[in-house]
Amino acid sequence: MAKDSAWTGRYGQSRVGWEFFGTELKRRREAAGLTQQELGRRVFCSGSYIGQFETGVRKPQLDVAERIDVELGTDGFFARMCVELINASPHAEWFADAAYLYGLATTISEYAATFVPGVLQTAAYARAVFVGSHPFAPEDDIQARVTARLERARIFDRPTELLWWAVFDESVIRRKFGGSAVMHEQLMHISKLARERRIGVQVLPFEAGHPVVDGALTLMTFEDAPSVAYSEGHRSGNLLDDPAMVAQCERSYELARSVALPPAESLSLIESVAEEFAHEHGELA
Image (cartoon, rainbow, N blue to C red; front, side, top):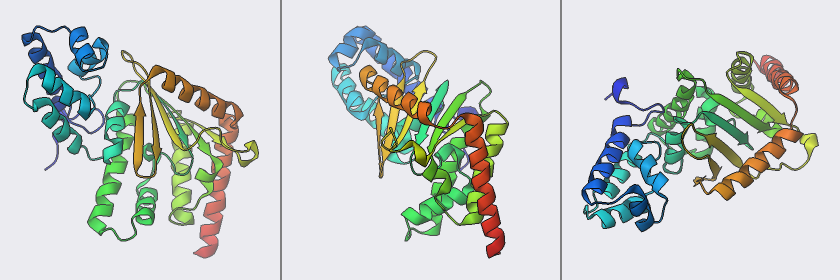
Protein backbone atom coordinates (compact mmCIF):
# COMPACT_ATOMS: atom_id res chain seq x y z
CA MET A 1 0.00 0.00 0.00
CA ALA A 2 1.39 3.44 -0.89
CA LYS A 3 2.37 5.68 1.96
CA ASP A 4 0.42 8.86 2.51
CA SER A 5 2.92 11.67 1.94
CA ALA A 6 1.44 13.61 4.85
CA TRP A 7 2.65 10.87 7.17
CA THR A 8 6.05 10.34 5.64
CA GLY A 9 9.31 11.81 6.85
CA ARG A 10 11.74 13.77 4.74
CA TYR A 11 13.64 10.68 3.72
CA GLY A 12 10.98 8.02 3.28
CA GLN A 13 10.65 6.96 6.92
CA SER A 14 7.61 7.39 9.13
CA ARG A 15 7.80 10.83 10.68
CA VAL A 16 4.81 10.14 12.87
CA GLY A 17 6.35 6.93 14.21
CA TRP A 18 9.52 8.54 15.53
CA GLU A 19 7.66 11.62 16.74
CA PHE A 20 5.31 9.33 18.65
CA PHE A 21 8.33 7.54 20.10
CA GLY A 22 9.67 10.88 21.32
CA THR A 23 6.33 12.07 22.68
CA GLU A 24 5.85 8.86 24.63
CA LEU A 25 9.40 9.00 25.94
CA LYS A 26 8.87 12.52 27.26
CA ARG A 27 5.51 11.65 28.79
CA ARG A 28 6.77 8.57 30.57
CA ARG A 29 10.02 10.22 31.67
CA GLU A 30 8.12 13.08 33.26
CA ALA A 31 5.68 10.63 34.87
CA ALA A 32 8.70 8.94 36.44
CA GLY A 33 9.86 12.28 37.82
CA LEU A 34 13.14 12.29 35.89
CA THR A 35 14.82 15.15 34.06
CA GLN A 36 16.45 14.56 30.68
CA GLN A 37 19.84 14.72 32.39
CA GLU A 38 18.87 12.17 35.02
CA LEU A 39 17.51 9.69 32.50
CA GLY A 40 20.52 10.22 30.25
CA ARG A 41 22.89 9.47 33.11
CA ARG A 42 21.04 6.23 33.87
CA VAL A 43 21.11 4.98 30.27
CA PHE A 44 24.69 6.16 29.59
CA CYS A 45 24.09 9.06 27.24
CA SER A 46 23.80 12.82 27.67
CA GLY A 47 20.65 14.67 28.66
CA SER A 48 20.81 16.55 25.37
CA TYR A 49 20.56 13.24 23.51
CA ILE A 50 17.43 12.36 25.47
CA GLY A 51 16.05 15.73 24.36
CA GLN A 52 16.90 14.93 20.74
CA PHE A 53 15.15 11.56 21.05
CA GLU A 54 12.08 13.30 22.41
CA THR A 55 11.93 15.84 19.58
CA GLY A 56 12.62 13.24 16.87
CA VAL A 57 15.91 14.83 15.84
CA ARG A 58 17.69 11.57 16.53
CA LYS A 59 16.77 7.92 16.93
CA PRO A 60 18.14 5.88 19.82
CA GLN A 61 20.17 2.77 19.22
CA LEU A 62 18.34 -0.41 20.24
CA ASP A 63 20.51 -0.95 23.32
CA VAL A 64 19.69 2.56 24.53
CA ALA A 65 15.96 1.92 24.00
CA GLU A 66 16.31 -1.28 26.03
CA ARG A 67 17.98 0.60 28.90
CA ILE A 68 15.25 3.24 28.77
CA ASP A 69 12.66 0.48 29.19
CA VAL A 70 14.49 -0.79 32.27
CA GLU A 71 14.76 2.65 33.87
CA LEU A 72 11.16 3.67 33.12
CA GLY A 73 9.67 0.24 33.78
CA THR A 74 7.98 0.17 30.38
CA ASP A 75 8.25 -3.60 29.81
CA GLY A 76 10.08 -3.45 26.47
CA PHE A 77 7.75 -0.83 24.94
CA PHE A 78 10.48 1.44 23.56
CA ALA A 79 12.68 -1.43 22.38
CA ARG A 80 9.79 -3.00 20.46
CA MET A 81 8.86 0.33 18.88
CA CYS A 82 12.49 0.94 17.94
CA VAL A 83 12.75 -2.46 16.22
CA GLU A 84 9.45 -1.97 14.40
CA LEU A 85 10.36 1.47 13.08
CA ILE A 86 13.82 0.36 11.97
CA ASN A 87 12.37 -2.70 10.22
CA ALA A 88 9.84 -0.46 8.47
CA SER A 89 12.67 1.33 6.69
CA PRO A 90 13.06 0.46 2.97
CA HIS A 91 16.85 0.63 3.38
CA ALA A 92 19.40 -2.00 4.34
CA GLU A 93 19.57 -2.55 8.09
CA TRP A 94 23.03 -1.02 8.44
CA PHE A 95 21.98 2.10 6.48
CA ALA A 96 18.60 2.71 8.14
CA ASP A 97 19.90 5.03 10.87
CA ALA A 98 21.99 7.02 8.41
CA ALA A 99 19.04 7.25 6.00
CA TYR A 100 16.91 8.85 8.70
CA LEU A 101 19.63 11.43 9.43
CA TYR A 102 20.05 12.23 5.73
CA GLY A 103 16.57 13.71 5.82
CA LEU A 104 17.47 16.00 8.71
CA ALA A 105 20.93 17.15 7.67
CA THR A 106 21.72 20.69 6.53
CA THR A 107 25.01 19.68 4.90
CA ILE A 108 26.12 16.29 3.56
CA SER A 109 29.69 15.57 2.47
CA GLU A 110 30.52 12.20 0.92
CA TYR A 111 33.66 10.38 -0.16
CA ALA A 112 33.03 7.61 -2.70
CA ALA A 113 35.76 5.00 -3.10
CA THR A 114 34.10 2.43 -5.37
CA PHE A 115 30.51 3.27 -6.31
CA VAL A 116 28.63 6.41 -7.26
CA PRO A 117 26.88 7.46 -4.01
CA GLY A 118 23.39 5.99 -3.76
CA VAL A 119 21.70 9.39 -3.76
CA LEU A 120 23.08 10.04 -7.27
CA GLN A 121 22.55 6.62 -8.82
CA THR A 122 20.35 6.16 -11.87
CA ALA A 123 18.00 3.19 -12.00
CA ALA A 124 20.18 1.37 -14.56
CA TYR A 125 23.38 1.93 -12.59
CA ALA A 126 21.76 0.84 -9.31
CA ARG A 127 20.41 -2.26 -10.99
CA ALA A 128 23.86 -3.13 -12.35
CA VAL A 129 25.37 -2.73 -8.88
CA PHE A 130 22.78 -4.96 -7.24
CA VAL A 131 22.82 -7.65 -9.93
CA GLY A 132 26.61 -7.72 -9.69
CA SER A 133 26.59 -8.16 -5.91
CA HIS A 134 23.51 -10.44 -5.79
CA PRO A 135 23.72 -12.44 -9.04
CA PHE A 136 21.25 -15.11 -7.92
CA ALA A 137 18.66 -12.85 -6.31
CA PRO A 138 15.08 -13.00 -7.65
CA GLU A 139 14.02 -10.20 -9.96
CA ASP A 140 11.47 -8.89 -7.43
CA ASP A 141 14.22 -8.54 -4.84
CA ILE A 142 16.50 -6.68 -7.25
CA GLN A 143 13.68 -4.31 -8.21
CA ALA A 144 12.84 -3.65 -4.56
CA ARG A 145 16.47 -2.79 -3.87
CA VAL A 146 16.59 -0.43 -6.86
CA THR A 147 13.39 1.30 -5.75
CA ALA A 148 14.76 1.80 -2.24
CA ARG A 149 18.03 3.13 -3.66
CA LEU A 150 16.27 5.67 -5.88
CA GLU A 151 14.32 6.83 -2.82
CA ARG A 152 17.52 8.41 -1.52
CA ALA A 153 17.38 11.08 -4.23
CA ARG A 154 14.33 12.58 -2.52
CA ILE A 155 16.65 14.66 -0.36
CA PHE A 156 17.07 16.96 -3.37
CA ASP A 157 13.30 17.60 -3.35
CA ARG A 158 13.43 19.26 0.05
CA PRO A 159 12.13 22.85 0.06
CA THR A 160 14.99 24.00 2.31
CA GLU A 161 18.46 24.42 0.84
CA LEU A 162 20.76 21.43 1.27
CA LEU A 163 24.51 21.70 0.71
CA TRP A 164 25.66 18.36 -0.75
CA TRP A 165 29.27 17.78 -1.73
CA ALA A 166 31.13 14.67 -2.86
CA VAL A 167 34.68 13.60 -3.59
CA PHE A 168 34.93 10.66 -5.99
CA ASP A 169 37.97 8.47 -6.35
CA GLU A 170 38.69 8.43 -10.10
CA SER A 171 37.93 4.70 -10.18
CA VAL A 172 34.29 5.55 -9.40
CA ILE A 173 33.80 7.30 -12.73
CA ARG A 174 35.81 4.79 -14.74
CA ARG A 175 34.63 1.43 -13.35
CA LYS A 176 32.12 0.11 -15.90
CA PHE A 177 28.94 -0.95 -14.11
CA GLY A 178 26.29 -2.23 -16.51
CA GLY A 179 28.16 -1.34 -19.70
CA SER A 180 29.12 1.83 -21.53
CA ALA A 181 25.58 3.11 -22.08
CA VAL A 182 24.74 2.80 -18.38
CA MET A 183 27.92 4.62 -17.39
CA HIS A 184 27.35 7.39 -19.91
CA GLU A 185 23.85 7.97 -18.56
CA GLN A 186 25.12 7.88 -14.98
CA LEU A 187 27.94 10.35 -15.49
CA MET A 188 25.76 12.76 -17.46
CA HIS A 189 23.21 12.63 -14.65
CA ILE A 190 25.94 13.72 -12.22
CA SER A 191 27.03 16.42 -14.68
CA LYS A 192 23.48 17.75 -14.96
CA LEU A 193 23.08 18.05 -11.19
CA ALA A 194 26.45 19.76 -10.88
CA ARG A 195 25.77 22.23 -13.69
CA GLU A 196 22.42 23.05 -12.11
CA ARG A 197 24.43 23.84 -8.95
CA ARG A 198 22.44 21.33 -6.92
CA ILE A 199 25.57 19.41 -5.93
CA GLY A 200 29.30 19.97 -5.69
CA VAL A 201 31.67 17.30 -7.01
CA GLN A 202 35.42 16.78 -7.00
CA VAL A 203 37.43 13.88 -8.37
CA LEU A 204 40.50 12.49 -6.63
CA PRO A 205 42.70 11.56 -9.61
CA PHE A 206 44.87 8.48 -9.78
CA GLU A 207 47.89 10.79 -9.87
CA ALA A 208 47.13 11.91 -6.32
CA GLY A 209 48.43 8.57 -5.06
CA HIS A 210 46.82 6.42 -2.39
CA PRO A 211 43.39 7.71 -1.25
CA VAL A 212 43.51 9.44 2.13
CA VAL A 213 40.08 8.11 3.10
CA ASP A 214 39.69 4.37 3.59
CA GLY A 215 36.34 3.35 2.09
CA ALA A 216 33.06 5.24 1.78
CA LEU A 217 32.49 8.09 4.22
CA THR A 218 29.59 10.48 4.82
CA LEU A 219 29.64 13.54 7.08
CA MET A 220 26.41 15.23 8.15
CA THR A 221 25.76 18.47 10.01
CA PHE A 222 22.46 19.65 11.54
CA GLU A 223 20.86 22.88 12.66
CA ASP A 224 20.32 21.82 16.27
CA ALA A 225 22.35 18.66 16.84
CA PRO A 226 26.02 17.59 16.76
CA SER A 227 27.61 16.39 13.55
CA VAL A 228 27.84 12.68 12.73
CA ALA A 229 29.93 10.52 10.44
CA TYR A 230 28.86 7.35 8.66
CA SER A 231 31.32 4.86 7.19
CA GLU A 232 30.26 1.92 5.07
CA GLY A 233 31.95 -1.32 4.09
CA HIS A 234 30.90 -4.69 2.71
CA ARG A 235 27.30 -5.20 3.91
CA SER A 236 28.03 -3.15 7.00
CA GLY A 237 27.86 0.42 8.19
CA ASN A 238 29.02 2.36 11.22
CA LEU A 239 27.35 5.52 12.47
CA LEU A 240 29.76 7.63 14.55
CA ASP A 241 28.66 10.47 16.81
CA ASP A 242 31.60 10.66 19.23
CA PRO A 243 32.93 14.23 18.69
CA ALA A 244 36.57 13.13 18.63
CA MET A 245 35.91 10.43 16.03
CA VAL A 246 33.78 12.76 13.91
CA ALA A 247 36.56 15.37 14.01
CA GLN A 248 39.07 12.80 12.77
CA CYS A 249 36.75 11.88 9.90
CA GLU A 250 36.32 15.56 9.05
CA ARG A 251 40.09 16.06 8.91
CA SER A 252 40.49 13.07 6.60
CA TYR A 253 37.74 14.36 4.33
CA GLU A 254 39.25 17.85 4.12
CA LEU A 255 42.60 16.32 3.24
CA ALA A 256 40.92 14.37 0.42
CA ARG A 257 39.32 17.57 -0.86
CA SER A 258 42.63 19.40 -0.74
CA VAL A 259 44.34 16.92 -3.10
CA ALA A 260 41.32 16.38 -5.38
CA LEU A 261 40.86 18.26 -8.64
CA PRO A 262 39.04 21.62 -8.38
CA PRO A 263 35.29 21.46 -9.14
CA ALA A 264 35.54 22.83 -12.70
CA GLU A 265 38.33 20.40 -13.65
CA SER A 266 36.49 17.56 -11.96
CA LEU A 267 33.33 18.24 -13.95
CA SER A 268 35.34 18.41 -17.18
CA LEU A 269 36.91 15.04 -16.39
CA ILE A 270 33.52 13.47 -15.59
CA GLU A 271 32.07 14.73 -18.88
CA SER A 272 35.16 13.61 -20.80
CA VAL A 273 34.89 10.08 -19.39
CA ALA A 274 31.16 10.13 -20.18
CA GLU A 275 31.97 10.92 -23.80
CA GLU A 276 34.48 8.08 -23.88
CA PHE A 277 31.71 5.72 -22.77
CA ALA A 278 29.33 7.21 -25.36
CA HIS A 279 31.90 6.67 -28.13
CA GLU A 280 32.56 3.13 -26.93
CA HIS A 281 28.82 2.40 -26.88
CA GLY A 282 28.46 3.78 -30.41
CA GLU A 283 31.19 1.51 -31.68
CA LEU A 284 29.58 -1.49 -29.99
CA ALA A 285 26.03 -0.69 -31.17
